[in-house]
Length: 228
Image (cartoon, rainbow, N blue to C red; front, side, top):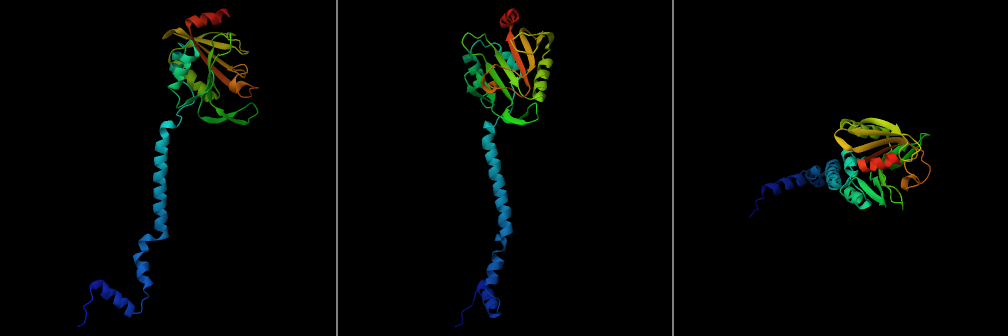
């Protein structure tokens, strides 16, 4: 008895009888898996992986380079290194405790020196005096004028206005002294200098880039600064 072929088998037999090479079937059936389609799929998968990686790293990526005016006002209440360490630990996503009394922005960027050379460094530091017998000093040093201007504008929005200018803190450049009715017990000093700190950390050697220092002290320390 003649076997009745099913639909798919009849199609295959017809292709063979008609002399069409059998590999044509495999080509037709595999067209959806062409190299170009695989490339598109691979590119889409790569983008998804990269997006997932960025999302995973986002909680650990520094978001800023400079402390805020309010943070500097709050830091003015610290009287010791442990107090500063505790304050900065809560901001360890953006700042690292590089050495004793030395904190620096985690993000690095290019800073132009006086000759136009670009130096890669933290865009700000926050140092406190830890030397034996040293008077208390806490200074936030910013290394780009744009960011320094932004921080100065923050203090301006808090109604800090120029009180006077003098050589207060032992620096070779004049410090501008600001006060605010909103913070009557706080005193702000801003200095543009090439000697932000004497032989300490990032400033151990000759400084060839402009530095902008922001220092905030409470009334008690302010009186000591004035007398000094």
